Length: 327
Ligand code: GLU
Image 1: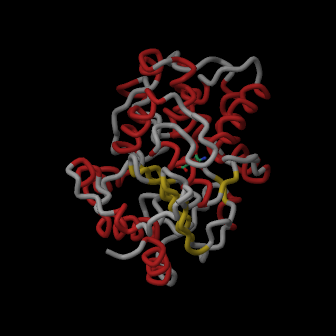
Image 2 (image 1 turned 45 degrees about the vertical axis):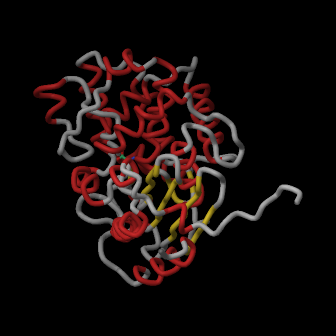
Image 3 (image 1 turned 135 degrees about the vertical axis):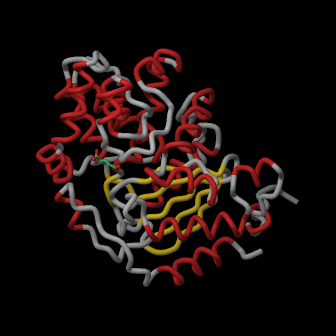
């Protein structure tokens, strides 16, 4: 059993030169990302952290925001009312598809695809756009443990080019799935996607989900515990674009990736883990991220069914914490 810090260092060395994949470019600002960036972060539910590489490099959170905004919508509306507007069914379609929405469902299948995420964001309560954005920022601040900011260039770049998302929103307006304040909701969606985070932040946020909604460092309850399971379920079935099934099979963790190269996974009751590396495969997942998670899952028995059967080997890989009690 390799010590976790030593294993992260090994993984960083092993995959640092894996220059496979493409940086996303359909949002022009994302094309500027440095393809060499690579960081791995692990934060345990009891607040210990282990890092390798560029873990303090900022990038925009993109689709990973969908997880946390879904949590807020669950708190705002409750499970049953939210399900009327956004389902929980994986699609196997591209994340920005609108065909099924138009021809069969009329209700977005799940909150991890763009249609479902835009509908979810449109439900965030607040009397105007500023109030709604401030609620989202306050929520993200609680997860991260410090102030968070929107990257204006990426927000404007996506707003100027997000015609497909605009089309999805109009289709949902047509079917009565979102209100007619859709330009405002789209702005809010583009802003949440342009939020700046680091790999360290994402691992901390995932650790809060792993810890039943309680932040591992501030100890604040950042999400009502009854919704943690809902979020983890949609992450498990829908979080990895068209690789979700294969990911569940091989790695076996609730996870979410985004087009800027972030990949965040939750090891229930153990840790949050994040990788940042902007080179993406054809599904839109970070190439180095997939490699790192496959190796971690194998090494420590992180697959949820390994965990459920008591085969997880993670705790043994952590050096014992120094005792703080008096002798
Ligand atoms: N803002 C991006 C979009 O809606 C998010 C995509 C992603 O990360 O999957 O196109």
